[in-house]
Length: 331
Ligand SMILES: *[C@@H]1O[C@H](CO)[C@@H](O)[C@H](O)[C@H]1NC(C)=O
Ligand SMILES: *[C@@H]1O[C@H](CO)[C@@H](O)[C@H](O)[C@H]1NC(C)=O
Ligand SMILES: *[C@@H]1O[C@H](CO)[C@@H](O)[C@H](O)[C@H]1NC(C)=O
Ligand SMILES: *[C@@H]1O[C@H](CO)[C@@H](O)[C@H](O)[C@H]1NC(C)=O
Ligand SMILES: *[C@@H]1O[C@H](CO)[C@@H](O)[C@H](O)[C@H]1NC(C)=O
Image (cartoon, rainbow, N blue to C red; front, side, top):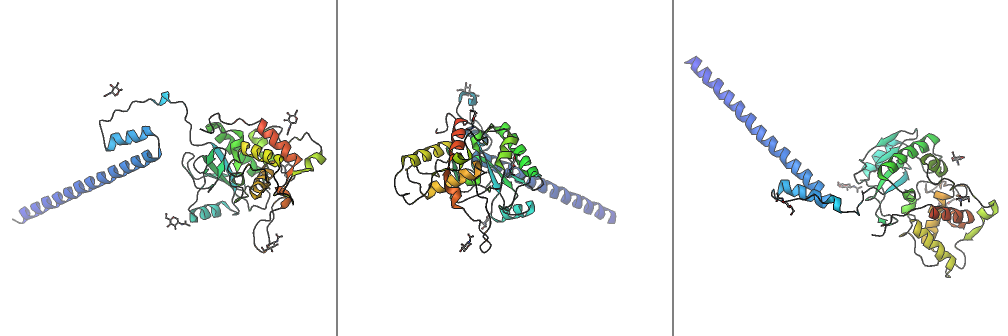
């Protein structure tokens, strides 16, 4: 009797364990299936028609007939068209990651002062680093770019080892995604009225030499006096139309500063900001490097940086002659 009772108790126990195992398996399967479907539909929502059709096959309409005609379509390109360089103004990599996370921002890479590259967001994913911005035919550069944050206070030299590491990284990205030379830009280029990074302390001469782009850009063919001569600037008569200003605005627009500048013939504030961004990037010999206002901590802008010099003109001419815009850039 006692032994029978014990046996049935054991059976009951075994049965209970079996039940628990079965229920757990079912629940787990449901969770896994739901998440897989969620991921599939998330991917589908931001991808191509093809992926949507595939997701639909697995979730809604199993009998859908998808014919692969992707080879029939000619005019399409991958998301990654531009590289945007930033400086952090935060002195460490750790601090940069913390600040980005606190502000709901992100960047694909961070370059440390010692040249170590930290990979944070997958190249094919969209990171949040550019904000309101434009370059060439692109508006909102987060959609179309890879962002690189370079650790620097904004008012310090960038060690050679760091510049070379950033250049080596860019070279890989350029080769992988076939980026055009004019589409390696600073944050200040794509948002000239809001942003001034990378700062004038960044050595673009070394950068371009390392990446192997625009050879000869920094070799000037004009005299020092011609380089220094101010061709255009805001002056007492900046409210007067000037065809030379309009021509300059058109050429800056052609190079990529399309939405940042109005081609109106007036050397206005927008033009000043674009000229400053251009000089910071392409005329390092003349650009007055940023310093900090000791009372506010803000960077100090210099009116000299907002003038159009002989050297600026020479460099813009070189750039326009050595730039190949995507044939379908305005599509
Ligand atoms: C799918 O559509 C293509 C093109 O109309 C057709 O050739 C093919 O037979 C269809 N396949 C199925 C399984 O219905
Ligand atoms: C960041 O996003 C979260 C929700 O994901 C929101 O609650 C928070 O306010 C955001 N923080 C900032 C600084 O925008
Ligand atoms: C920038 O790099 C170039 C090439 O290495 C070098 O000749 C030049 O002195 C550097 N400029 C500054 C300001 O350090
Ligand atoms: C300087 O002249 C050379 C030879 O004509 C030319 O290849 C180069 O592009 C010129 N550089 C600039 C900055 O205009
Ligand atoms: C620093 O900022 C203060 C307050 O805005 C301003 O009055 C002063 O002119 C600035 N100094 C420089 C050197 O820009």
